[in-house]
Image (cartoon, rainbow, N blue to C red; front, side):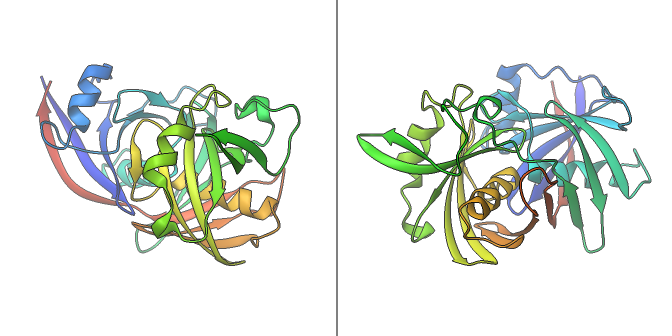
Length: 276
């Protein structure tokens, strides 16, 4: 059986996207890992499936699989690619697209110049809902890692994130600390790890070690979580440009209980077919 796909990218975070409405896709973890392999498969950070709606008042359902075969709840860069895909492939003619995910409903807005604005919902800060093991909610927490005490922010954007402040992202110990924090027992569903350098209240730099994928060129939910953590610490404004290795995202958030918005590019790289 031959399956049609589109290779897409958002700030260098790359995806293989399937229309799972017009063709049957069985996301077996072994096949997902093969597909994501950059030598033996197509190669990508994540695989995205466009499915028929499951939630009320949505037009599609959005599923995300990491390169290691695990399914995750949300992906911000993938959401922008999802919006571009359903428009470019003629699955919708709308500029505003309501979409269901494992984390709930989101809304995608297509703008000019390949920019997509995403309603990412209200950031989750309650430890039990992130999930994160802590007695009370706080803007920062102390985390013991490799015999060191680290100060982290803990935020869920539909998927869990730990955010550390660093003086220089270029020299941050991403490869060392990322894997250790990802599987820390206080994050029972593992965690994405962001290393953020604040330049000024409206600008920051960020590297993200993603759960199940390793360090990527960009992470949309990671940028959202970093902005939330920085603002809760009193260090960032309500509109911030966050520069990742693959490019810049604009994140807007007016505070706890409010919806967060993310704006950035998404584009198709090529279309293809693969034998299953």
